[in-house]
Length: 84
Length: 84
DNA sequence: GTGCCTATTTATAAGTC
DNA sequence: TGACTTATAAATAGGCA
Image (tube, rainbow over all chains, first blue to last red; front, side, top):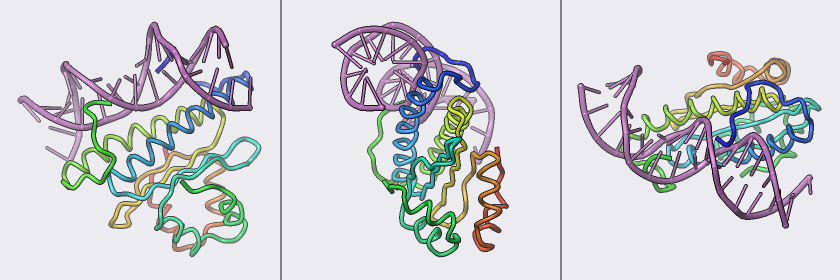
């Protein structure tokens, strides 16, 4: 899509962030479509090098599983993220 | 992409499974590209209605986090999945 | 950092075998 | 079930405002 790019880390930070932002939203959109059309629950997380989280695409079952089984350190981080 | 479809659950099971299989692999491919080009770790999980897991797109940090913080019931399920 | 534009590249629904 | 093919629709890299 668009002009082709190499499959390697984009070294220019600004460019890398712009590309990430754009592609992440497309990926989430796709994940949401698949979740609905194919009747599956989808979980998606992106960790930046600074260890911050990206976003979720999720539904009920995954929220339940996370609340039930995931210990506090990761749970605390996960709950700061928007579900969509 | 392709002929347009409605944003709702595909009722025909066979068709739904075929579509899911195709779109899941595309989504994983995209996630892998983003992970490399944008230097992020990506985690992706799909739960079917039968509660079986789909697949992962993951890297080192996420594997570490899962091993360190996720309790056994979910961990046991996660470890049966391929990382790619 | 945001938000559109668009030429180009990908994804993919349907179909066939 | 999978592996192709193809017409169509979506994603997107690079620009530009």
